[in-house]
Each structure stands twice: as C-alpha cells, then as structure tokens.
Length: 162
Image (cartoon, rainbow, N blue to C red):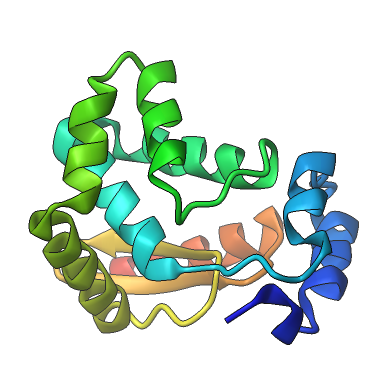
C-alpha cells in the first residue's frame, strides 16, 4: 500500500536520525514525499536473492548496496532497474541479475528468506542476531546502543562458561 498509509514513517525517520545520526538524503525524501510510493518487501527480497544468486559470497555487500540505493539514492527496491544499477556498479552481469530478479527461483528464495526470518524470531528492522550452531539469540531489535549489545554478548559468554 502507499507509504502515505504508514503515518509513522516521517516520525520514525526523525527518531532514527536522532538516535543514530543517520541522515536521509533529499532523493529518499523526494521518493516518499508525495505518499504514493509503495514499499514492497517481496520485490526487495527477490532483488536480494537475484544478487545473492550471482555472487553469494558478497551477500553483506548486497545488503549495504540496497540500503544505499534506497536511503541515499532514493531508488525503489521494487524496480528491476535498481538491481541493474547495483549490479553494474559491482561489476556483475546486470542482464543476468535482472533476469534472476524476474525468475521463479528468486521468488522461491525470497519465500525461503521470509520463512527463515520468521523461524529466527525476527519481527522488526533492524535486528541483530548472534548465531552459534543451532542456537540463535536476538541481540537487538530496532535500536540498541553498542553498550547494550556488548552487555548482551557478555551475558551470552557468561552463560556459556557456566
């Protein structure tokens, strides 16, 4: 649905800026300004899957590139052209990435990603997880300071020692 129906976005962005110092670009502000922009997690998940399919060892790089494309460049993560541009900037075969974006395998991978996310207990963005074998612990959901994350990690270490 259009972003205008999510009345909290501008306030949430202001809070993010206040807490983290992150800045939202003019391009991003323009993307959401008229309220008609539609955020589509499924398309973004397919795009991430298409990039991962092309170069899986660079998954963290793709996540950062997509964040940059959205929040800095003001590009929609629902548009194949965004993935073409990310691929070109990364030296990948852009046509292959766009084809993968449209392919059933990307849809299946996106569904798997959503299922795995739910299994891990992730229900907010961002979420930071500590994964050790079969054990997964949520270290932060939404905002957390480095001190809070350090304390949670120390608590995990203390439990492992006992």
